[in-house]
Length: 228
Image (cartoon, rainbow, N blue to C red; front, top):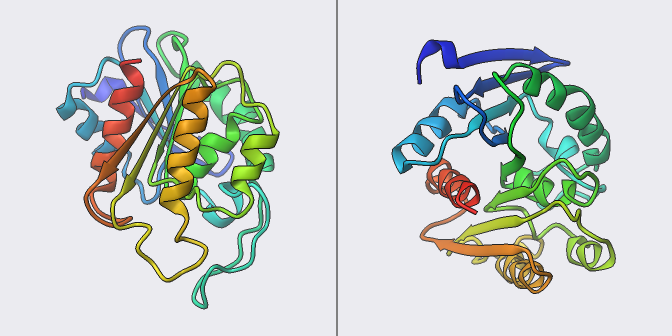
């Protein structure tokens, strides 16, 4: 992408890599793990994605801002999750998103929310709290998260959601960790549940574990969502 179509924003402690289409197009908000916005953008271009703008948000406190409620550490070497998703979502919708949209040449056709791992969990959770996003992309999402399935069943998702993409590595559920083991079963259950609710939904199984080809998996999810 040409330099004039790329800008870096600093908004309330978050660094946002914005790659924007020169004309009106969808906007994908992606919560980055380690500054991989450029790599993701390039992967999407190689796939021939339809025109869109990408805002990669960096500086995420993963165990707080991407988690819906507190849980203890899931292993001896892990840290607890503090469940700050609601607080962060208010910042995203009230502060970050308006400034990202203001930096675009024109307002987006629609906004999509994409994420990997815990950010994939957050992408789905956010649609229960806001009407801002009409497409959701959850690649290797942490859908093992305790009590998330009951939450989905007991609450209405935004009526603005038109399409949801799920993907997972075929080795991700092969673990002795009792927290992580249900991830494939839960992802399949959610894909079926949303499909039965009339939402365009797909589930893609990929070779490998949680860490294999994360950028490629994310790009594939964005491509699918943009084509719906």
